[in-house]
Image (cartoon, rainbow, N blue to C red):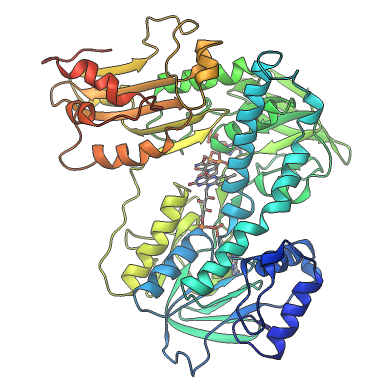
Length: 552
Ligand SMILES: Cc1cc2nc3c(=O)[nH]c(=O)nc-3n(C[C@H](O)[C@H](O)[C@H](O)COP(=O)(O)OP(=O)(O)OC[C@H]3O[C@@H](n4cnc5c(N)ncnc54)[C@H](O)[C@@H]3O)c2cc1C
Ligand SMILES: NC(=O)c1ccc[n+]([C@@H]2O[C@H](COP(=O)([O-])OP(=O)(O)OC[C@H]3O[C@@H](n4cnc5c(N)ncnc54)[C@H](OP(=O)(O)O)[C@@H]3O)[C@@H](O)[C@H]2O)c1
């Protein structure tokens, strides 16, 4: 074990070891006896991630009995989104927690392999898309396909990911006052006890937060070199792909497919259900889906719906994918790169001593208080199944903490605002138009472009990030829809494809789900910051004078 908490000989030699790793800048050196700085954490984490075999000791930040001799209220097994937020909340409530993570940092898969690289790739895709569209105009040079490299952007991410990791370790220790042990796995002994590096810790409760990983389709050849998922793309990619086949039809497939295509790597998506029509996505509006799919096709992505992947072909290295078309014909696509986005499942092997109840898909069953079937054992985050999103992981962790600390707190995550990226930001909340029609008798919509407009000449939405499109090829500038119950005048759903609107959807979701709802008249009374990305406020104002509002 390495003690990162107490200044002493061990701590001094750790600091000297970090100093020998190099420097990130003048601010990365901590004073003698002072806690590790963010820069020191970054150097240390980077070294451990790059050389795990030489860095097998755990990083211990555990209070001694002289500092805190209380029993732990909870041990959080896993310090990702759910474990870190739950721990921080429990500590803030005056409880005592211990968080254990196998990685040398807190924060989990999001900043290491999932959301954060996905956002970097999606931003890069958006930039490349615009640069390719505008090439030869204004100050945009001809687009150099050779400079747009998947491998280079992955390397850029890897070279910088220790910064967010370091901030989370530093913040958790110095500001949130959490106790943690990192860089070593926890072993479950029983419902109150875990073992770390040979030492046993007991607590009043356990909170299980170990997440989920890709579940690969069970087809021949899936283990051949050249098949990647979101995690191995980051860790193992060692060549520049020239041609890509994606298996899957949900967020990962759309986001990574759009990125690969934007770099110039011709991409085919093989999807079983129609794109975005998978059970894991709800409230997807048909008009939004059609615009998203049309714009992906417009950028050159080949989308094969109803496809059944049969085999990954190769001879030590991927050369192609064999699949069955909806009509039954078997076809092959030549490729040197296969990317898998077929969803995630938890690894429950470590929980065998607990005998937890699980559902038919293999997720841990937890109730709205995050309680599992075993008294005193809670579960949070991806481990308990979809939606596998940060809001849900973090709030599950906090929900468990609140209940551990005696509050009767329930978290219902069945309704939430949602988003994904293509080379656009795609956001939605509330009901789709079809869902609203099925539930209310007088549904109207505000939609841009309207159904009867020619989208090639209709330059709305135009705002942050879409202005250059609006003035050069209007159809590329985005799409929006607000669904309204004309009788009550309440907004039922909001849907947007464009840029810059994601923040608004966090608030629209809250407003429309209040018991009193949110009317189009209240929307029209807001003070817009023109040009505002989703245009909903001024468009509602154009209709708010009508006693019996109609479509716009
Ligand atoms: C490609 C991709 C992009 C995504 N993008 C977004 C996004 O943009 N927005 C969004 O809201 N969501 C996004 N998500 C979902 C989001 O990343 C997850 O929902 C979230 O990270 C889950 O948090 P968690 O705490 O359940 O698990 P994790 O954050 O994965 O944490 C699990 C932790 O458990 C640790 N662990 C495992 N076993 C042990 C053990 N035996 N002992 C100790 N520790 C252990 C691991 O090291 C890890 O740190 C994305 C997911 C993917 C795959
Ligand atoms: N917020 C974000 O931006 C974001 C980004 C990325 C990921 N995530 C989260 O991360 C999780 C994983 O995302 P995901 O897109 O990989 O998974 P997902 O939403 O679970 O979708 C899985 C996709 O793979 C298909 N599939 C599953 N098994 C298959 C098989 N054996 N053969 C062929 N196709 C198969 C499914 O098709 P069917 O519909 O036919 O079953 C579906 O299209 C999700 O919960 C997601 O919400 C979030």
